[in-house]
Length: 78
Image (cartoon, rainbow, N blue to C red; front, side, top):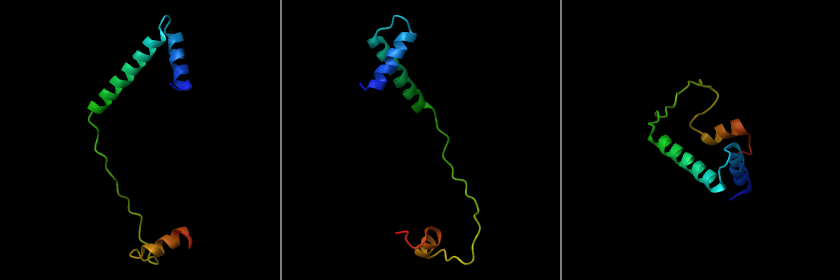
């Protein structure tokens, strides 16, 4: 185990008087695994992209990607 994980487990042992290292690790793993199971069960809202009109600039040719990149990023965009 990494040092930071061991430190957190020992912190948990101190806050829960009398808990052994093994009990603290098992409790933490159970909590994390149960949380992961619950998170997977919850239906997620579908991701939607909201389009926004950015306007049209008449001096730009939107069919020429290279020219657009050069206009936005300069001549060294490659």
